[in-house]
Image (tube, rainbow over all chains, first blue to last red; front, side, top):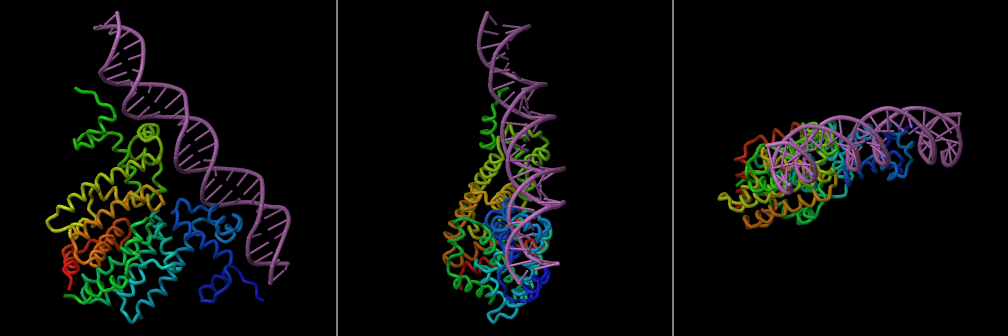
Length: 196
Length: 196
DNA sequence: GTAACTGTACCGTCCGGACGGTATGGAGTC
DNA sequence: GACTCCATACCGTCCGGACGGTACAGTTAC
């Protein structure tokens, strides 16, 4: 069996080979989980290492600085967003419906990292803000291509962003809204899309 | 000339008398401004005191702990939200239009403190989350009263929350959306509200 | 034998908070 | 109306702990 450098492991992951979770993956997941649940402040290196079941030395072996951790999370998001955009563009239901439908909280890896990066952006982390800019820009472009009326497209974008807003916010009211019928919401999207 | 205790000064503020900005007000504004611009992490007591033009000791005189600062910001938000809800209920254009129209970034005191509390909530600050729950619950109730179709009401709520999402996010893409024509967006709201 | 860790010990900085001052300006007393 | 007393409204410094990061000597698994 070949030995693998950290980089080789990373490449293998990017190429889609599924592998048993390495320490590096566990650390990244733990960091994202802490960001989501308790915010940037609580996502310390010690806490991340503890949650990942790894020593601090082990964490620093993979990520030499906290910023490296943040960069890796952002990179993961951009990778996932790239794939999501392709699915969105090819969706038979149309980009607008796809966008709104997938904006609801599903326990996907994509959402997990999206929410993590939102928390980073809330701390004014410039690369996180830039990454969100890029992701939203892609979505907006695809929705605008799908929806003839630009004002309807804008309203649909906002609905999706409202759902993301809910997904990144803890609290009770989010459940009452997001938990409701997606089908009915998609009908509203259709109504906006079709014009009057 | 009457003497005023700190409590009397506070009461005067609550009762709506306009007074020259006291140190307490300046500290609160500074703290909210730091939360908005750079997030919870950067809104330290030292930074707040410096921005308010007050010594650290002076800050701690008015707010004995950092949590007291957060509580005061939340209280301010709830006060402002109370007044906003009353205006929303009485709005001739209807609650739905009022809600969406005022969800765009205006440089009001209300928005300033709303964004500050969102940043606190992003740090999993429980009272901040509860306050946002309450504010959003009021809005939702009023919009549901205004819009016959509950699914349309939900879509309208989400549009407003999408706008708030933009307002709390730095970055370039927010401008292209939020800066666009509010009138056109309100037309979309009308279309949702009227049903098909 | 090398990559992938563990575990510990340590450093400098920052942050929240405690604390001891100080200036001011009434209130009460005679 | 001078004197004491005291509350308000601050200032400036110090401390303990947490956090990011360094260093490095061992250990395990392939």
